[in-house]
Amino acid sequence: MVNVIWVGLILIAIIYSLLTGQVDTINNGILTHATSGVNLILEMMPLIVLWTGIMKIAEKSGLLQVFAKALNPILRRLFPSLPRNHKALGYIASNIGANMLGLGSAATPFGLKAMDELQKDNPKKSEATEAMITFLVLNTGGVTLIPTTVIALRIMHGSANPTEIIITSILATAVSSISGLVLDYFIRRRKRK
Image 1: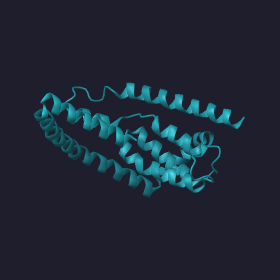
Image 2 (image 1 turned 45 degrees about the vertical axis):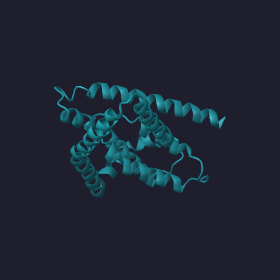
Image 3 (image 1 turned 60 degrees about the vertical axis):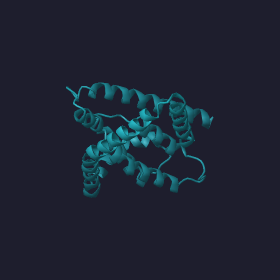
């Protein structure tokens, strides 16, 4: 559906530029912004590779398992339907850790592995389980303590104080996480009745 919306918006822009005689503006915009997009990717790639590598080292060294054990009391309450040592809990903890550091790109592989593990236990493969929905809510609204990627972007674009967003990021993501988890809890509870 999103692809259809994007194609529609692009077609509207092209038709509008043809009707108003601003084809040069569209051409210049495409070339300029394509170059900007490639430059952004090239600037962000080292940061993404670095943090993905660090997360992989943490996974191989067992540090993520230690983090998962530290989070286990919280995760047990959030995911009561999962067995105590379910493999997905380690991936969920890793995803939470990466998101706390503002490393969405490094968190994605852990999130995909967690969903894959949760899907293995799903009796109805075409429907999401309660644990899958809770993880999606937790991942989407995840608390970010240090928005590393956003800080890096602010540095690249010449921000005078790139770290000034830390407090607001913590507040915004904490509110979104708590709101999402409370809503998830009440919907789950209501569904059971």
